[in-house]
Image 1 (cartoon, rainbow, N blue to C red):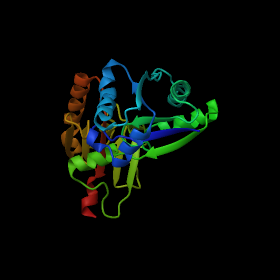
Image 2: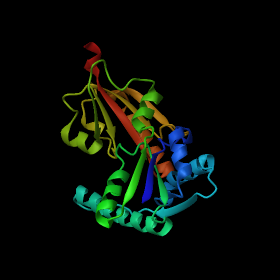
Image 3: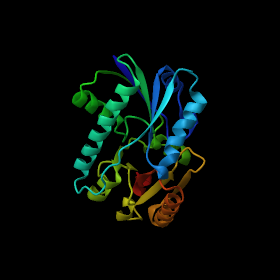
Image 4: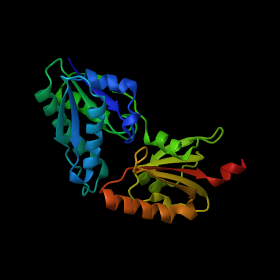
Length: 257
């Protein structure tokens, strides 16, 4: 039976690779590296750098492939994502059939951690169901952007006894700050949804390209730093062609409890 290793590689620093991840990488027959176009070539470059640094198995092959793009113009976000995942699952099936035998072992290097706002595991399950491909699955956890954000700001994620809520920019904009939490961690926010909140009620801890030489970190009362974050984000995205960022919001009144 084919084996598939899904390896979390952290947020952009090759030193985020764990010993477990290095071991899984070196047991694979092939490492599959996605390309996402010229504007995001840095993402493939990081995976190549990890292989250059940690791959010591001389028989392991590196296979690069072009990842399908999601139709951002689809008015239904969920349908657009579903169609995109179907296309990727079809591509994965073709790659595995071409580059591994029935008892072969392939590895994917997943940004951050495979369990948190990454769809690789979902796509693998779709691959099993739709293509009928039998797979043994190994999952290696990685450092998430949430952990890297807390480390960069030198802070704990939670208040004493307080709840932490993980959400997306889309959900924050639609539903507001969660009522049952002191702290909200916001991911996948392309539109700076924090601008919809009362700026005097929250502190924000924002970071982009976390753990890399290009890291940017800004923190303060939301009123005071929201514009600075927006400008830094726009400038960095224009310079690199892509951005990965996340932020933590905390109610300011928690300091009085």
